[in-house]
Amino acid sequence: MKEPMLKFVSRARQTPEKREAAARREDFDEIYAQFAATRAAEQAARCSQCGVPFCQNHCPLGNDIPDWLKLVAEGRLQDAYAVSSATNNMPEVCGRICPQDRLCEGACVIEQSGHGTVTIGSVEQYITETAWQEGWIKPVKPIRERPETIGIIGAGPAGLAAAEELRRAGLQVTVYDRYDRVGGLLIYGIPNFKLEKQIVERRTRYLEESGVVFRLNFEIGKDETFAALREKHDAVLIATGVYKSRELVCPGIGNNGVIAALDYLTASNCTGLDDKVPAFDDGSLNAAGRKVVVIGGGDTAMDCVRTAVRQGAASVTCLYRRDRKNMPGSAREVANAEEEGVVFEWLAAPKAILGDSNNAAGVRAARIELGEPDESGRRAPIEIPDAQTDYQADMVIKALGFEPEDLPLMFDQPELKTTSWGTLRVRPSSLETNLPGVYAAGDIVRGASLVVWAIKDGRDAAAAITAEMDARATASFAAE
Ligand code: FAD
Ligand code: SF4
Ligand code: SF4
Image (cartoon, rainbow, N blue to C red; front, side, top):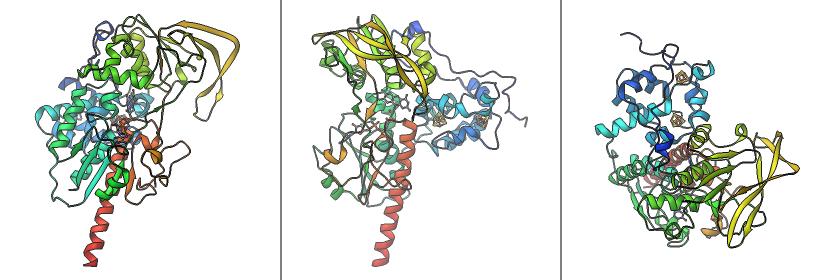
């Protein structure tokens, strides 16, 4: 058979079609189409099948990328799905929202040689969407059911990945979440135009059919104590994410019209799901017709500016204290936002919210120059004396990142150990906390991170919990 691969010189990199910006501004639908079969095979065939695949090393899940690219190029899609799903519980989600330019695709040697990276994420999405359409994705049926029960707190990607792996091992799994839907930030944080909600709901149905029990509207620390949960289960996994907004301290920050990013995004997502949201209906969390300034330069800020555009804001400006090169958000998302009409004001740090307590009227920002790199590796912002600009705004969205809530306090477990950042302290090899039989995964361990890392942690924690259950079963068998 003729070698189908190594076509990167003769074949240009292509991404799936992106809808025109003017049409995108009108709705919350995803902006990228999916690859057609021939296009996916053509693009997969650009891979040079590296002996040491840097793409795989830079994927947090260590996905076997060259193998599934080759299988797609050969038209062996079911095999490609088997390889891809062996290391990833949500390939169709990661294919859509991983910042590939900073992970797998950023490390592709073809990119380094100037030919444009292989479009790994889109091919990954295509493989799994095909698997869903063809009915290849079947609920988990463990070889044998086991009696041990595991309680998972949090139905975000970390909790869900762990739940699936634990069911695969035959363990009985209950996932508790304080929200009324499964998915965590996949549902309530990330907007529909990046990840349509039915993609997450399809995974939820699959997990239910696999035997995972969900208890929603159920907050640990309120509806049940953490101690009672521990009593009830053989092991507990904490996958609660990070939800405390980082605050901006400046005059006028309490003015009406200054809102937190997650409140804003959650209201928008809930409205899209046909929930009744009074704060959206009364206009406080709706950008329609308003002059919006978003403060921040990460992915949350990008989601806010692009949501405001879709809600029909009169103008949308993003203020960020560093420059484009030194911002934490994905370059792809910044480009999408610019196409959709967002204005970026780089090197601008907020000094005060203008207006009065009844209404914000704008943001006063200091001009900034960049100094030497700081501990984050990015160049430190330094204020230029007496240089400032006022930006008009009657809605100001604070998108400065998230910190962990005080879990030892919320769970009434003062002995639960945390790091100096407030994240849970775990043994790296097993993700076990200092409380025996209590594990932790995802953002609550790493701080605000990425879906793909949450999935990786969920899988690692599930493997450690399964090993502990095996060890306990062996010990009790030996004692009989
Ligand atoms: P979460 O997804 O936060 O889930 C935690 C769950 O725990 C929640 O459902 C919560 O209700 C529940 N919970 C918390 N406390 C309790 C309790 N006491 N009792 C019961 N339930 C509880 N990552 C990407 O890779 N790509 C992106 O494009 C991207 N965009 C993002 C956009 C926004 C606006 C935000 C905020 C984040 C984004 N992220 C993105 C980051 C990503 O969403 C997170 O890293 C990921 O969701 C973390 O997963 P998790 O399971 O640890 O936590
Ligand atoms: Fe790339 Fe993310 Fe897929 Fe890994 S999971 S191959 S980083 S898109
Ligand atoms: Fe293929 Fe690029 Fe990965 Fe090499 S680094 S195996 S060319 S995708």
